[in-house]
Length: 179
Image (tube, rainbow, N blue to C red; front, side, top):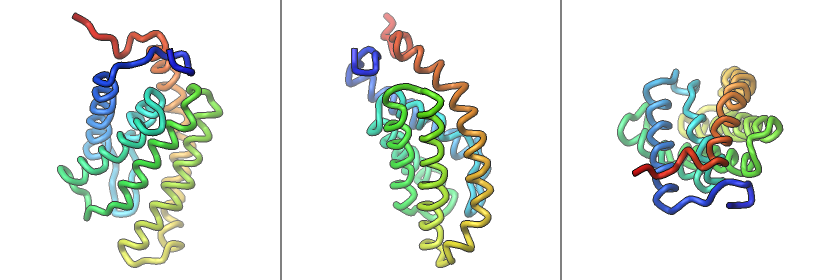
């Protein structure tokens, strides 16, 4: 058992977890979300947060970064820009950091606020301003809508999903090997 009361996983289980969550992130981000050149609304945060909950900041960060790289390579929405890969890594790392002691309401709310305001609104808007040679403030105003929607909807969705996932992680039934 680790410090959070979850059963320790074998290396192959962690690779499988990150691979599965990365695949889900790519599918949700590239096929089941709304994209414009400066806005993205979808559910791709779910597998990233789940990887962060299950494996901590590194697992969440790798899931976010790998999902961004694979998605941008196989299904580009615009030009590849490594700044967004850094943001995707930070998203997962933030979820992993705040959720490392469990999927509490406080941890979920804080992780969403940091990812939405700090990374999505501030950092990603900076990347867009840099990429498209536009003023940060001009881009920030329309992106406030995305941030506000995310600050309301993401905690609600995560509160529905993560406690159930955490229950399976603690019992060891989620990643059990079956013969």
